[in-house]
Length: 184
Image 1: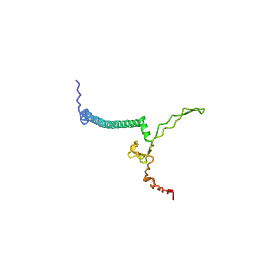
Image 2 (image 1 turned 30 degrees about the horizontal axis):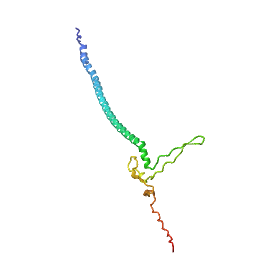
Image 3 (image 1 turned 120 degrees about the vertical axis):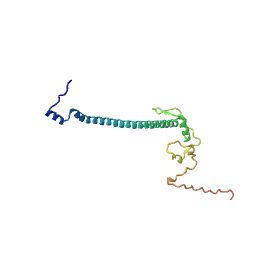
């Protein structure tokens, strides 16, 4: 077992003045311990910030998924409305409300100028309907089909709009012409 030799004389005095290896090791450990504590604290703070950012991103993702679902539902509802308006039965009903009638038999022209088929005119509608001007102004923000009450007979006088800049003046009444009586 080896022991350190004891110093004598001058060497012993110098050895007492200089710090020994034990205190020097403790002085060198303090910055290392401080560095390790700072790194661990920084790592924990970094993890906290990263966790908060991920949580915020998760909330935004959930909000965006919900908004996407709402927009998809709205798109499907609008597509159903388009399909309902473009159905043949609905087109026929709306066309008849506008006074349209089915076309007659068609005729075709050959390149030589001859007519193929026997054309026939479309049957006349019993009472054609005309779209009244108030039906053209929408009362709501969404486009909708005009209601049947928005149609007027063509013989009825069309109402005038005060914004049109014209005033409604009655037409002059026809003056009765005297009929000659026989014998006078």
